[in-house]
Length: 301
Ligand SMILES: C[S@@+](CC[C@H](N)C(=O)[O-])C[C@H]1O[C@@H](n2cnc3c(N)ncnc32)[C@H](O)[C@@H]1O
Image 1 (cartoon, rainbow, N blue to C red):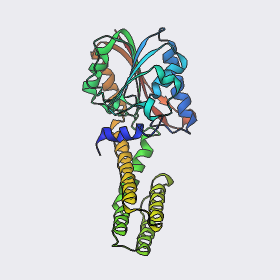
Image 2 (cartoon, helix red, strand yellow):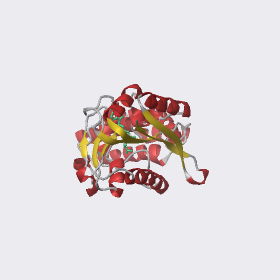
Image 3 (cartoon, rainbow, N blue to C red):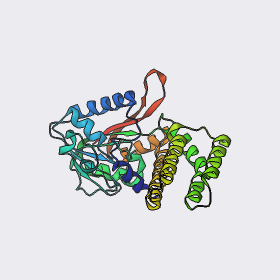
């Protein structure tokens, strides 16, 4: 699946953000705090450009603490939070622009008081996106980026999830289901093959991946048993495979985007060479529970 399509599907599915779970309160508190501090020191009515915005997670957090900000938010995916999500009223003033590659920004030089990104900038080709973001920033304009760390609490589990997806797909589970739909495998044979896969699985089976896929197939079997129209079942099966491909693609992109300390240092050097003052630090979780990412801050000289 094409990289951008995987994100378009995700954002059109009413997700508020990615790379943190709804239930992980600590992540929310840490990120809210970062964006609260940043928004409060921006002048009244400052213009902010949020890069790779998704469904506007950063915009929402900034506006929560400083409603005067004029936020423009761009993403390469076909985003439209006001259409596809239960968008918070806070986002009503945000100018969202879909289908924008941050490697070539459609703005004049020196127009924004601030540029932000949360788990977004590092997905782009940095040698192209960094000059662009500096170009559109006003002199004395500020930037703050939250970036994936190569060993963060999001990146480490993502590697296990990819392994699980790949082994599950290689097990033949989906192929067997297709044979069943085509009438080449009986229900009993399908169930026996499913049991074999589960019993012989060499991967650690999570509820979120193996569990969900087995559940989805069970539901499709029920539809077949209820003599539901084959076209409907095939469509549901195709949608399920698309969701699996999209999740796999996003996880692979996440791993590739995550940065080591050396790479963050290189990113900061590139920013400095373009006439900015910059510093970076680790964003750590409480009680030595690992890291969330990198925070890069600075301003254009
Ligand atoms: C992990 S999501 C983060 C979204 C949002 N900032 C958040 O924190 O919820 C990464 C986003 O980067 C976008 N993206 C990746 N490469 C991009 C590029 N070259 N230009 C613009 N957006 C890009 C993807 O479409 C995706 O929405």
